[in-house]
Amino acid sequence: MSLAHDRGQRSLAARLMPAGAAAGLLATALVAPSAAAAPGPQALLKPKAAVAQLEEPVVVAHRGASAYRPEHTIPAYELGARMGADWIEPDLVPTKDGVLVARHENEISGTTDVEERPEFAARKATKVVDGGEVTGWFTEDFTLAELKTLRAEERLPELRPRNTAFDGRYQVPTFEEVLQVRERLSEELGREIGIIPETKHSTYFASIGLPMEAEVARLLREYGLDDPDAPVAVQSFELTNLKELRTEHRLRADLVFLTWHEGAPYDLVAAGDERTYADLVIPSSLRDLSRYVDGIGPSLQMTFRFKADGSVGRPTNLIRNAHRAGLTVVPYTHRPENTFLPTDLRVGEDPEEHGRAVDWARAVFEAGADGLFSDAPDLADLARDDFMAEQERDAA
Image (cartoon, rainbow, N blue to C red; front, side):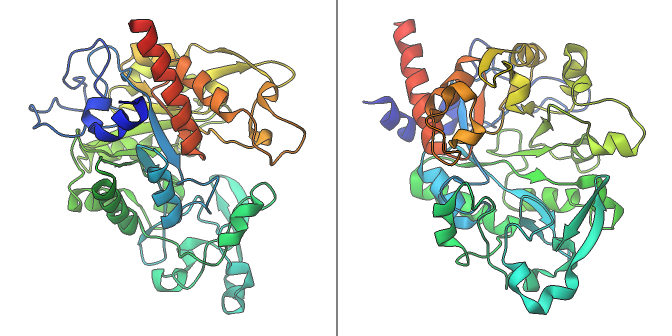
């Protein structure tokens, strides 16, 4: 039986058992240990004992298979899972009437046809979001019924011109619709498909009376996913809302802190806290984070050193340090186009052409990452096949 076929037949629980660590949750100050759960799918980023590293890395379809379909559309999520992804990732923002929808940003002129809709011309506005001025059309100024009249468009048409063939075909999905797709894909594919929603601009939305956290928790409970062993994790570039999900909303599902190689979480900036993302991933900070989150999602620029010419160098110590703190690590974002690859993995001079993306994904797995967010989950899955085959040969 080939590795690829074997992967499709095994349960997610079997794929995510920790390597060299006893089963059971990491007891923390803010997360009470749970009772033994019935057999079922393990959570994506559940730390086990002192080491959180997973036996086999996971592939997350970043906004769906967004290298091949317009991002955050139902077909993009479906294709991602069918290409071998274990998890699908919707970014969440609210509508005017408080419904959570899947968009990368609340400003939607680059991902929908709103600019071409004269009936919404007057909705164009300039706002300050996370301290920066943004001009365009915003989800919080549309009811769900109005938003459903729009159609999705490719966000990067200059780099992904083939995806423009799908412009105008798909609606903006709600979070609930994506949860339903997750259930349907799990049944169709015979394996649990996980979901890892990201709450966007939490501080901003709370400031305008549209906080998202209670609705996220409500929907996860409604769909039976508020459990430490459920195939779900909630992620954010901010810390305050992750703490609130754990403490105020008593969410038991996994939490993931996303980090960027520059800047600082906006909730800390707004509160006058001077810590940056870099400050939050030093070993002592990682140990503190493990009190209320289960994993981190760093940018690839934080997990590898890059040379002056843009070629990839050695991994940083971040993955090792996070594992020591009991946190799993799933970096972002793996993309196949030359413009997004290290210079030594590019093929030709055309920025939109695909380079050695399989090699790039494999390098991430070899660095010890527990998974990878990928716009091209088929290529990440192929790299995982190669990586696991080599691991099995070495162990033989």
